[in-house]
Image (tube, rainbow, N blue to C red; front, side):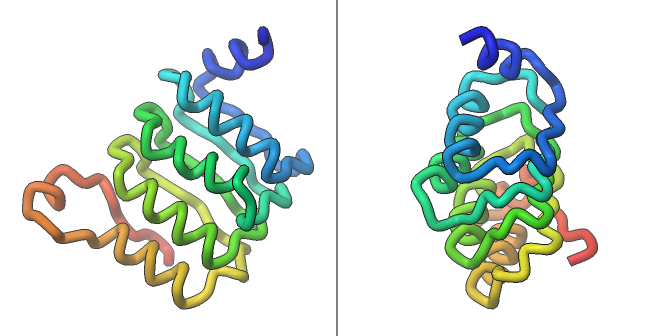
Length: 138
């Protein structure tokens, strides 16, 4: 559709506080797979949650997307399963520089552990050298 085309050609999407749910992020994930220009995506304040196929589809798209640099997921009701899925997929992503997860109080020890492991994956020296992963204000 023309709306999807319009989204694919944008550098920034500021969709905060628009009541976007898991179904909405699933659609965004599909759009991101075909976007080579989207660099900033703000989803802050949306009740995305993380226990649905929509969230997992969205996080899967992050490992394929090569343009996104900034992702704001502040107050999106993400919990452990969502953080684990996010960590698994962003560990493969080479373009993403910043992910904001403030206010997702459902992320517990398992989710934080997965995110830390993603940031500090030292399985090979080359992987560390090629990584853009850093930890800021955790």
